Amino acid sequence: MEQAEEIRDLVEIQRKGRTVQIAPVSYEDPMHPGQAKAMPIRKTRQGGKIIFDNGYTREEVTEAELSSGQVKIVRHPFVPVLPKQKGHSCTVCTGCGRCSW
Image (cartoon, rainbow, N blue to C red; front, side, top):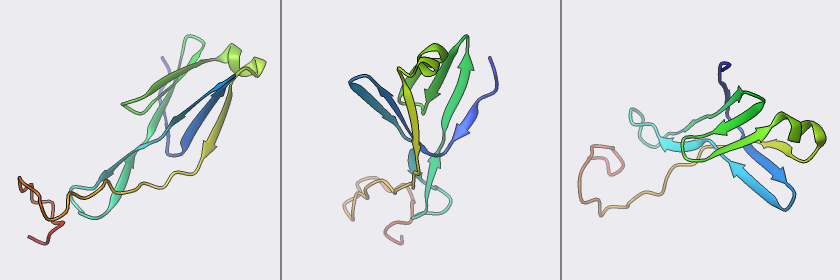
């Protein structure tokens, strides 16, 4: 197994009649509340397959599919976005700093 490549773009895998999008996972930086960060997609090659994995979605593409044109991989820019805030009705304080407590 080769070393994984980190991809910070949105990856779109287009197959005949089916398109799958895999995006990096956005999260709020716990040390800097209000700042968005993203965990990248891991791209690995293993036994003639290319594997895209973001921790939640995993998609495999064979090198034969790519070379024959059956599958097309497109990368789009990705900007991390903060998850929706709970508002001022947080029930359990985690000290995140959103409400300036």
